[in-house]
Length: 255
Image (cartoon, rainbow, N blue to C red; front, side, top):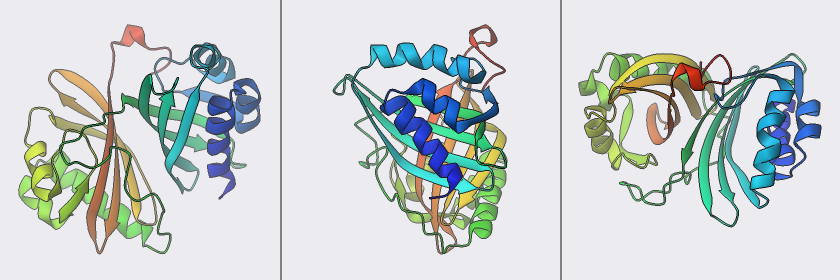
């Protein structure tokens, strides 16, 4: 594991799961810590103002990093959190930007309740976790970028088959299995309009996008995780969070 992945892992597992938030945020962040999780203020002190009470409220914290990938100075991870013997279960998706030494400088996330039932029958955080680092990262990133442009933004749903395998393994709780399930969802009111791609990162056969869609009169921040094989998307996870009103933000916002 590289130093960047290692620092993100330790911030999560030592600082949050292990409960030593002050030491972790001091050791693994750099000269600044700009925050986009809207309930958390900027800087190490903003992190502590949120997480020290969180640790007190949740003395039992079972946290597992399900997927983690690195792309230059960027690190993405998907985590499953079970708090207080399962009283609350969450899926968090996090994007970090690091400095030249690998210390964390900036953070974006979405947080959603873990759903035990999915339309596809697949677990929301299940599936392949190991990255095939021999896969062509740049080709996979280019394919996903074109999928976002042509299918999500231009709404050319007739082109889904150019990018997505027929037997797509679907983990998003509200999307049915396969290419047909995804295509049907893309045309739904729930999917809405994909308005903005903020960042695309990848490693090997995994590519992640972070962007914004508008549906049901609401702005929604969304991470999509794609696994690719043989030039097609073969597995998909999604984590979405409604963006609250500006007055509720504790920082500059989700993007």
